[in-house]
Amino acid sequence: MHRFTLFAALALVGCASTSPKDAYRDVAQKAEQQSGHRVMWDQGGDDDAKVKEAILKLLASELSVDAAVQIALLNNPSLIATYEDLSIAQADVVQAGLLRNPVFTASYTASERDSISPPLIFGLTQDFLDLMLIPARKKVAKAQREQVKFRLVAEILDLAGRTRNAFIALQAAQQAAAMRQEIVDAGDAAIDLATRQHEAGNLSEFDLANEQSNFAQFQVGLAQSQLAVSQARAELAKLLGLWGPAMKFRVPARMAELPAQEIALEHLESSAIEHRADLAAAIEQHRTLVYAVNLAKTSRWFGVLNLGVEVARLNNGHIAVGPSASIELPIFDQRQATIARLEAMERAAASIQRAVAIDIRADVNAVRARMVASRRMVEFYAATILPTRRNLTRLAQVQYDGMLLGVYQLLQIKQQEVTAMSQYLEALRDYWIARSDLERAVGGRLSISTPPLQNHQ
Image (tube, rainbow, N blue to C red):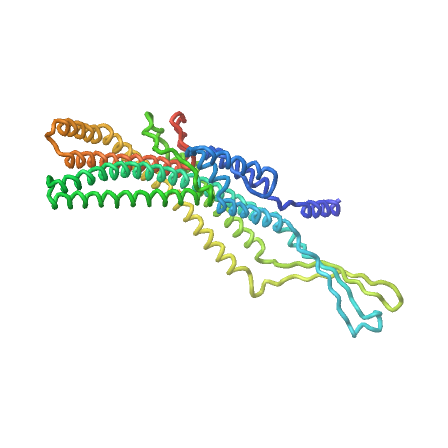
């Protein structure tokens, strides 16, 4: 019965799969649950062609922020490369469950040549203590695999957040560039008028030079805005994994306005502690080292116990068979250095776990405060500053129509309105980025309709 059990165990060990599909399925489900987007591992199968077709379809039309995030999660090569960590982790699990190979020995003995012919002794030994340590080794390897899974979920959510921020930054840059283009177009008309007035003797050379200087500043501002658009597009394309003709993707020209209702801001700390994958990875790292310390302490007094059999052919033609055994004596190395090293790593991992939890709480509070402040700023601009600037421009237009105000004064007031609008757009951009960062800090998408979670810690 024991022999059957041993052979069955060996058969199961030999059949262990190195495929990371099950581990990846867990990662994909967790990531989709927290991000709202699917992920796929490009491994050259039939599904990969469908993914590429879906990406091309999304790129054929104007991208939404969710479409951009979906493309990034399907197409970012750096993210796809990290999935191979699952293959490595799964291979480590399989390796941890394998017995060491038996050792075949052959020795020549001159002293026994009168009784052994030929004077050769053959042996086969196996380390059987290794079999006892397999469950503990597999426990350590599986904990390490769990850590990798949580780390990959964290990287997926981080990429989703960075993609949303890059998308918002591109939209904001496009809007700012469009407004500066309007200023330059108006300034160009003003310069043309000023030149003709100067030629007619109705404008001094000083005033003409002043207008030309202002127009040059407008052109510099436009060039800076156009550069910002190019840089923002390149950053978003990098996250989407796009290059070449695919760089011509389109995003909406305007950012979304403030939502009428704000997301629930209560219990965000407890939600982050519950859902943040990087904290879960830190917990698994600590658990892995606890297992490793226990394994090292368990095996410190015995390292190798080889049991085997030796075979030789006697002069009379009979075969002599006898047992053999060897054991490692822990005289010099009692694993004290290994245990001390692992214990230090375990204590460090425990501190890192606490530090990550503290950082998460601090990040949530800081980003929440930034989002609330940005929303108030946007609302202040929308309710006070922009209406005031628009009213000044309207009044200036009335005075200009009544020939009570010059065209240059009108353009200057219009420039002040555009400047206020630029500041409003910057505040709106900061709000949407802060909201995206808050979702990253909490560890998942936030919804207005989602009730706050109960405090678990």
